[in-house]
Image 1 (cartoon, helix red, strand yellow):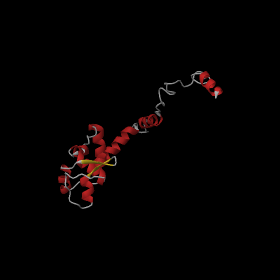
Image 2: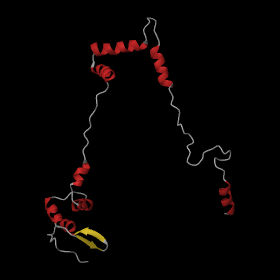
Image 3: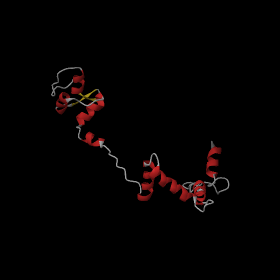
Image 4: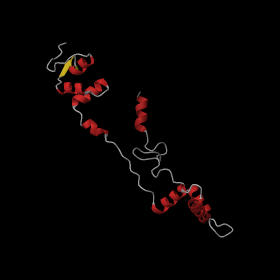
Length: 162
């Protein structure tokens, strides 16, 4: 035991050499270097000039324009051209606010849903409006939700006495 505590006290920051990782300091502060290999190679290849004095880039543009004008399925080529010239159009997403529905529910409705894994129907909503919280053996329960499940009529002022 004493030997371990001595070793911990004698530990040198930065490991054995003193140049290693230090607390609160990243071992790779600049992160992984960005590689440009594939992109650079592709740009160099497209910039090459063929025997006719035209670049591959110019030939690709010509193929794309010909496909848009005379191809069997011109729409994808037209979309690519417009996306490059005008920029992509914005896409709208409709997002439903589910929390708005929950905010409209009363505490009693939310508790009923937690207890029964369903929302109360109209009759149960009327009963929940007049419900009283009852403590039984240290647990909070709702008189109405238990009695509704049993198919009994509920007196909202009645309390269980266990």
